[in-house]
Length: 448
Image 1: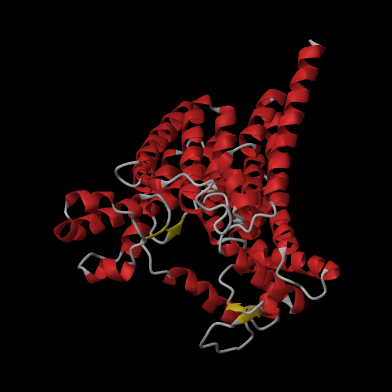
Image 2: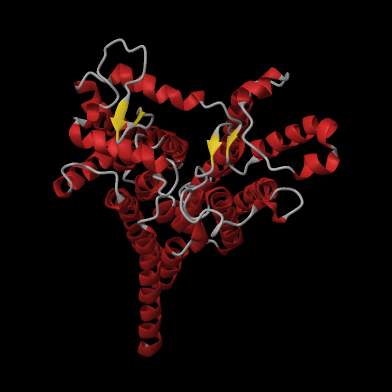
């Protein structure tokens, strides 16, 4: 029995090393245009106090403009991500006092991303191993570590989503273990790292309330809420102390001002935007040219200009409705850790599918949470693999493996199908979302 176990361990270690080597090779890639924003914040966090990056005007009328390498911009993310990038910047400054915009800076920022991925890798392996054994732990670890969507999003394109997924997943695990104060604090850190962390707050509260006695439930929810308040205080206290609260509120409000139905996210709004363009183009171009044209981002202002209601309102209502359904469906099974992971994945999927202004990377959080659910519940594995493929395709179809390097060379051409492949992937995502809901309902019933 020892020889097969030793061989399995060697295979596991080899595959982990392979995932690490792929990430290491991808670190120098320039990533997407967002990397320029991360560099701007990283530099300014190194040369200025990070809590002051939003600005310190007690009555701000405009956003504070930051400068780096001839470019300008402002902060639109919550403060915890700034603290992390600023720490990277101060380390970089030790080795490069002049702070050049070079490959080393790109690698340093991506190492932060990969570091959080490594943290999640250990977290998921140890937790699933404790619950289900070594074999399940190894499966979960490899399903995450070798997932093309995770590699493409992190070490290749340089998105920051792994920074919030790590504390969010830890919060869900802590909630299922009964560590509710810790859970609340962790989910607050996730939300103050990236706003998408807010989507998972209801999953933590659902777990806290999942007891037979309502008095105990109230006490548990209160404990989680206290942790949420504590984590929020730790996250924003430095900004408040620096006098930056009004400026931070103004900066974060910009997140709701994006004029786009879908920011290259293959979701229901991408399909709607394509359908509207076809409808208006067919009279001038004819059916074939209209149907086969390459889709582009459609502005919300244009959508409302031609007579449709505000998609921000519609998308919010749809997403909240789907999330409420998931929470209600799982209410009797919410003490099961795998069900809570499944609920969290569905909440992220609902947001990424139905809300307006969603970007191509916002589906990220659903994939690692589905790994956790699939480790315990095999019926989730087809959903996990399918959604992983959709996420990876969504990224690659728009950015390849790097927006500014090798574009086209390692990028699946969306024109290989009659209807643009991004539209077909979006339609597939809509169908998978319905399938995801059916699997969630069935697994909750079985758990209950």
